[in-house]
Image (spheres, rainbow, N blue to C red):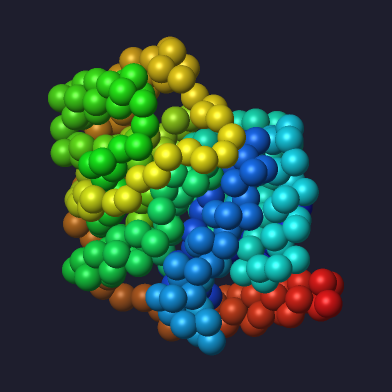
Length: 294
C-alpha cells in the first residue's frame, strides 16, 4: 500500500497540466544525497526557465527508507516550495516509486532521475528540448546514455552484458536502458502496462505502443555519498522473468491509428474546467506551504 504524506490532491486525467515538467526522483535510504540533488535540480530548471516563471515541480518518492531520508526531505520542503513528497510505508522498489511519482505529477512532461546523485540534472533541459521538438511528444522517449560511465569495471561489465542481452531479445535500440535519466510525457507513461522493474524496460514499452526512442549522451558522475542498493545478482534473479514478460507484452501489443472525429462541447468544457481548478489549487498549496515555514 502507498501512503501519501504531502500534496495529496488527486491529479485529473487531462493531458494539460499546471506545470510544463515534473522531475520524479525515487529514493531509498539516500539521506545524504537529498539536499545536494534537490539544489541541483532547482538550479538547472531555474536557469532554464528563469526564477520568475519557473514552470516545474519536483516530486520525491520515499520508498520505505529506514534512514533520515524523510527528515531531510522535510527540511528541503521548507526551503523549496516546488517540492512535493510521497512515501511508501514499506519499500516497494524503484519502478513502484517512479509510478507513484508520475501518477501524482502535475507536469505535462516527466523527467526521471536516480536519487544517488550520479545523474546530472543539468542534462534535463537538453533532453526536454529534444522531446518537445518531436511531432508528437507522446510517442517519443528521450533516454540518457552514460557513454562515459563513472563506475567500477565490474559494474560496467554487468551493464554491458545486460544491455547486450536485452537489445538482442527486445530490439529496443537503446544502448543504456539502465540510465535513470529519461524524459517522456505523463500521458505516455500512464498508457504503459506497469509491473515491477518496468523502469528498466521503458524504451521497449514505448516502442510497443507505437513510439520511438532517442538516446542522448549525458554526463555521469561518481557516487559521492551513500552506497549502491542493487547488485548483479539482485538484477539477475529477476532479469530472465522480466525479459520473457516484456517479450510477451510486445508480441501482444497493438498500435491503433486513432483520429478524433468529434468531441462534445460538454467534455471539452469539463476538461478545461478541471485544468483551471487544478492550477488554482496548486497555487493555493504553494502559498500555504510558504506560509507554514515563515
